[in-house]
Image 1 (tube, helix red, strand yellow):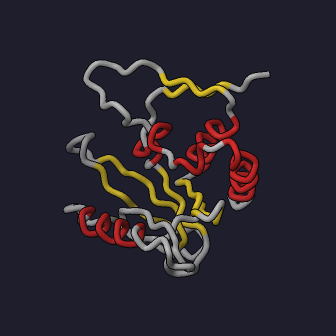
Image 2: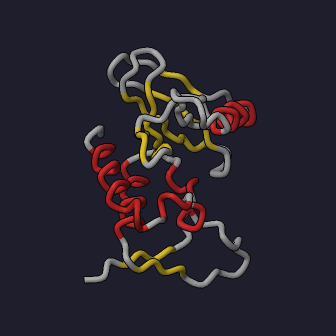
Image 3: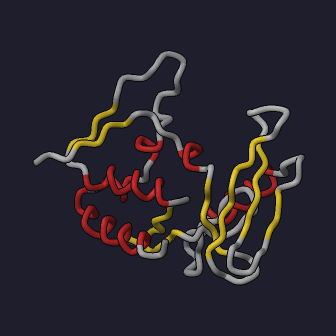
Length: 169
């Protein structure tokens, strides 16, 4: 039986409505949720909440996303560090769903993101649907996945690590 994956153009930002992170206070799982502003659906605010220790923090209205993004990019460039962790780019906190795999870090924002990765990796036939007018070429998450995740020789190891991450939920 052929397992088929169809790339419908999902982007990484499609999974940002809920991001699972390590709580800065108790080190357990916390959630960053997107709260839409009443003034505009384009303007959204991020809020982190931990149900274990009641930690709560809201992103300032000015967003300061640029500073957090720089922190994330600096961390991402530090791959040779053995304590390397992927940080989310709103508050700069470590992602809850990350694990060492094939000499790299396999990570996901949430369960839906993990399911997307699992579907992609286990597929034997990967189809890219024709680009829509006015869309970016090579802009989908599937087209942007690192080569090591796409390699057939890593399929079983990556799927095993995805299952380990699912047990953390």
